[in-house]
Image (cartoon, rainbow, N blue to C red; front, side, top):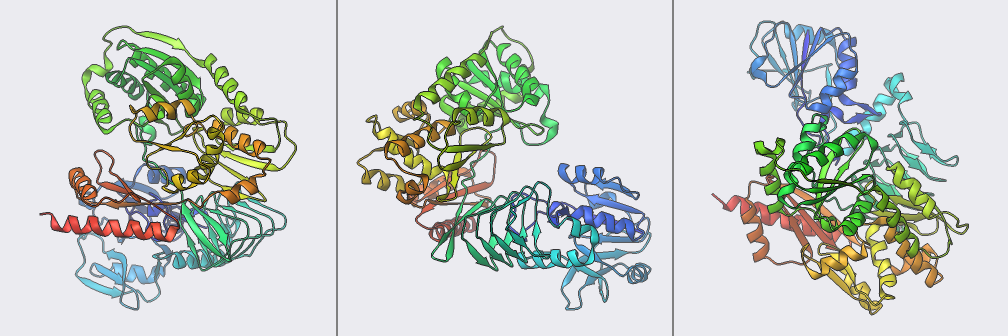
Length: 624
């Protein structure tokens, strides 16, 4: 008997971004891995994965199964050369093989549950064509369990814990840290790389990978999606916390603030097949259509060959190229100011890499510039040298960046620990902030060095946007306004007015405000931003907790809508319905509209996103 498994469906049972259903983890084991092992144990001879993406194929190839695993792009190439089970939705199986074999010997049938609902499973006898069956059969003892809601997802995982010894060993994922006083009952599943704080109490919960739970948190029957942060003292029951959400306790309740997720500016997508010198060569040479002074850096040593290939492509087209070596994007932006480079090229990642171009000052390319680069990449002249350029080494300029940070630092006051995925940047930051013996602060720094958050046991988590507002008090001492992106939360001006300070919004990369934005470097360099924050704390003799009391709660919600509308239609809708609380981004060559709403509460921001989605749907239905 063979099994044909549809692998092209994205999950909709919990809000995990861009996760194929096949990779949805059940007790920290991907659903497809669990299903293939089950098929192997039940005596199937072959499994065919229909329309798998690169990640699904990589998983299947790593399992080393005894049964044959094949791949197919469409049903047109498949035949029932043996009795066949076709699953149009992947499931957690509990099958009666005798029942399946008896049904396979008859006509092709579509299986239903006892309550008449579709099981999304079909049985085809040997020699039949895999067409939609005309007859139905009720599966009496063959169970096809799927997670359509977060509650079902949690319930299925807890059932699996009881039935499988192997899954019980996977109940707590790799790299997860539980404090000695934390408690998690036997029905709680915790993903990889999670942190559970002191006296946390978890009952019947499912936590995704990268979740952080603070001290004295109580969670009961909750689904916490990956990379969420639950602040100290929060109490939740029967809750679903979306991916990348931050929860703060507020009079016994919790309010959510979703991370702002900016669109990728990469020339290459995230698939390993793009990690080639040829692609990097094309990228470097294509960027010369935007300027002849180009600065190149990378986040990990593994990307050095791609950086050299990009430099070769740019210099072969007459550009002057500076190589900054292994550095963060924030450091690259600083070196770009020193060298007056027009284009910055930063290669992010260690195993899966992205070649990301920026304007001077770290601004993303405009749509017109991105279109010109794409045209240049597709042109055959990209791979041919036109005229020689010049190659410079800029690694020594990193020392000037460190000096500029030290000049901003007040005397060491706090015991600061740095968390950062970029090991080189982490060691540099730890050295800069060493020497303090006071209150302990954990500084979380993004891999590119541009974003930070700060945490102490007294203050809880203070997000990047709030720290930017706090730096306003440091900039004010220099009689300067603070330059912020145009999309920054609207409450910035209200906060500035309380301290007779000024905010300047940056709308274009060639505006006068953009020059101030580049010179300050606060929005593009997380370490410089934290230096300003430490200066404010030192000058005002405040702790981080006291500073947190001054800051407003900034609620930003981003919502994605897939639409058939053209870019012109979306822009026209926004012009005819001006609303400063909402911004709309539609990436080039995409049908994905990104709504970003600012409000005083996450509920209001989410309601605003829903209102604008309705407007888009109405416009979509009105167009011919």
